[in-house]
Length: 397
Length: 94
Image (cartoon, rainbow over all chains, first blue to last red; front, side):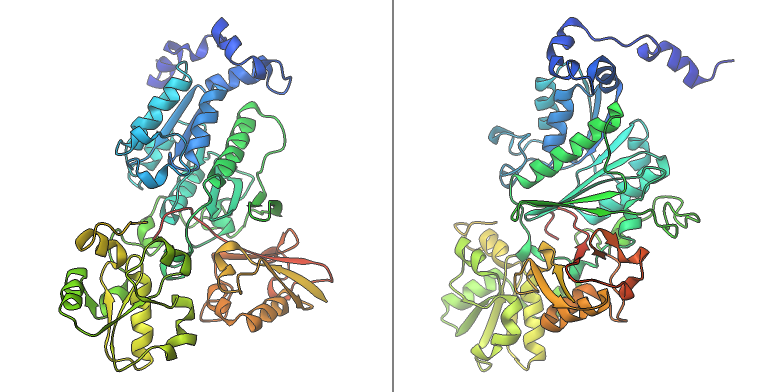
């Protein structure tokens, strides 16, 4: 008796010879005339199933070029909605898409680009509960996410399912690209066994990304994905490509499979998906410890006290380029300079420290308290909360 | 032996905003010590409290990962490039 999957397989056109229609031949002619792709390669693309995790900066060139290249089935996973600040780099979206679920806007755009392919949408957070189920139907996984918990989740799920994971990550002007998850190659944990603790990753002060950077990195991920599908060229398996857009330089490092890797080593200790928020030390929206342990003032309380004429010294611990975006007229000492410049502050006056969101200024308050300042308060929620609660004319960034 | 230590973007803020620093060293350990002697703020980003290189930071001599060579004791020669390569996740601000 035939099993369910055998019945499904015989019923699917997958077993019938796959061919290109006349319109498809015209569409893909620039592929077809290259021997490296040709008809064989284009038919492989047509039968390929690729899952893109994230439809943001990296997901944009991925989605667009995979769809344009004729990858037959593309899955998209994202839970977010399009936001004004996305448009600087997430070129899948238009201004009119602001507020729409990303998945919906992305699928519309890709279906418009290539109506002959299948677009699957997963409007959800990828999690330990759903990852294996979502990933299992695809040949290749492409990681276009923006945070450590999801990166480790995508890695582990790809290793468990023995699927290649085309990896790209970005920071400011710098990108890293490779392919993990190949049975003979390394996985993300071979390279980085553990994520950085939240306090040590660069804070929002040093964040940001050059808009075109994910375009370049995502395009390289796409090229690697297409090469894996057509089986041509030299893949990035075992090589970490580093790109610095500021120096405009590519470098390459060797990646090795770590025999002691807990995920893909000779004696793996991780055999199922774990709790990645806990593993990465981030627990949803919970505030980090320093923020809760320092004395705070809310934006409304601060406004009331300033209006009343209280003698308050406003200390802005952001970076000078942030001060230029918007400020509350405070005295600017970036957090990194505070230890050297604390003597500029008058410890007899009451100080209110603020930053963008309240995290850096909480560190500043903690530091100043240790340095002997008695009257220091942290502006709760930073300039973002000030904009929400007191003065909406202050732009949020 | 003069070696060039490449500083990754996320750590440049703790190294006088420089892309690379020249130090004199015979081993990777010495090169990194030369670097953290010049830029003390880098120390806690590279090493844990027990003095071990952090697990989200990898160090390469030219294109070889020192974990598969002689770790801290990996020799460096004149003109070698030591790269610090931390994990980066993307744009999320948290």
